[in-house]
Image 1: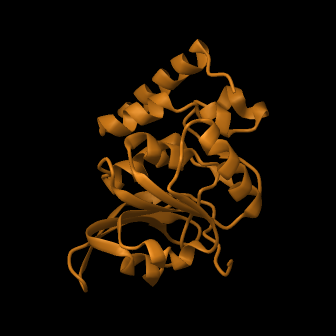
Image 2: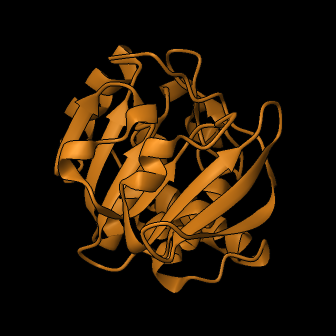
Length: 213
């Protein structure tokens, strides 16, 4: 669980890379600069931890590319204290970024192996989600709704209606939509019945899996 000066120096370089790629939100960049991403990866990958690439983790999933994490977080426009729902805890890295920014975080993971790992690991680093849930992200988390923001960290072939329904008016859903290649899509809830939709280019994600209770 070491975070050395070398790691910290590599993180600074990563932050510079993200700036060059267009990430402008200072709070997001500060969070990326503070979080020891190498601790979220298998030890064999530590030297790759601060390269702007996705890497395999357990259960055939990946830890997202830092640019993708930063971009989704930036699009979510999180303010301190905002109630955020994350679909797909995965390694816990995106959760750590949201918690570092000051979100009140609820996070759902459907792979039991990843769920157990993140549940033990995040608090060790001082990151404490309000709730971590093992379950089906397509259903959202109705008993805690409405949310200021919802972030989906896996490719969704369609936009699950429960997620739209669980947004506050003024809330944002950030979701990569598509089968093989996903379009990063943001839904802004403008009223009980109206949503504004914006698209932000192509990304590649592992698929969002459903039918898991």
